[in-house]
Length: 95
Image (cartoon, rainbow, N blue to C red; front, side, top):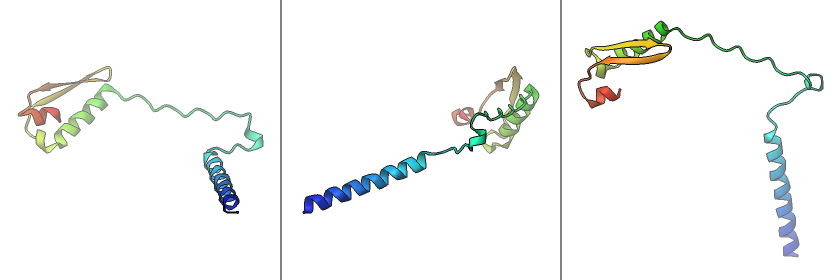
């Protein structure tokens, strides 16, 4: 009798676990009227200009207290950033 009780409880627990997994796996609900429609693609953000990128990088460098007073120039060409200058130590260079 104990074997039957254990087996029945194991089956009940397995069924409950499986039901919960199926219920949590449903991430999207499509109404029947929209089942054939595809969602519109999201608009891609406008690419940032080289000047905007350079300004952002220079602002971040100036905001870092460990880099205060160090002469670091920022140049950007086709979204590739180049830093020129000298750092006081390895920690500053790592920043």
